[in-house]
Image (cartoon, rainbow, N blue to C red; front, top):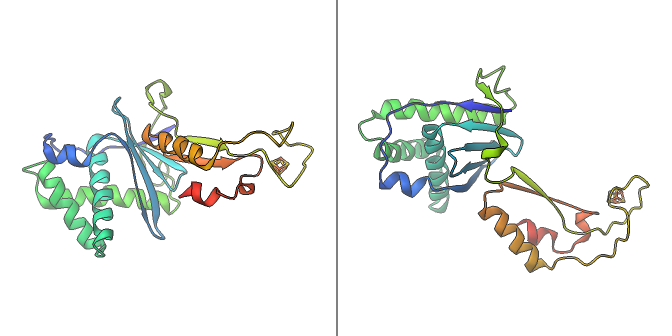
Length: 213
Ligand code: SF4
């Protein structure tokens, strides 16, 4: 099940839209508040994962707000000036270029609706019961990539649990660090927002931290 969030304003595609809203996975972490991953695909699915657990399906306008927001947080961080008010101002300015003729107040209200929704879900609010968002069945046939992939980076383990599903020999040939990095880069490129390192015991690999970066 996906939760649906719709924001409607008149839309005009232009170069600003292209600059900020390409297909793929976009992400940002707001320390202490939330981590969001947003994926737009060629089938028109706009999906937002909040803290890796909740999934919202958003319409194109809401997706544009989130994309521009992500972009502006990254820009602000790189310039060392990430105050919430400044980011909101930048988002409104940029969205005004994507949707010319829309009043700043309207853009500001809509941005706050989108942001507060994400923040509330991150804080534990139920999107359906608390926020009254609609629900929609997931149509996996239209997805271009899975939402998560588990990578068994090793079968080694210091334990020997009788119920272990890994079973068999633990000394099997493993991919090298560079080979795993290529796999991880590829998964990101095709739009997989999350990976989980598993095994065996993934921590048996000395390069686990490096792979996680
Ligand atoms: S991989 Fe997990 S289940 Fe298997 S032996 Fe190690 S700790 Fe036990």
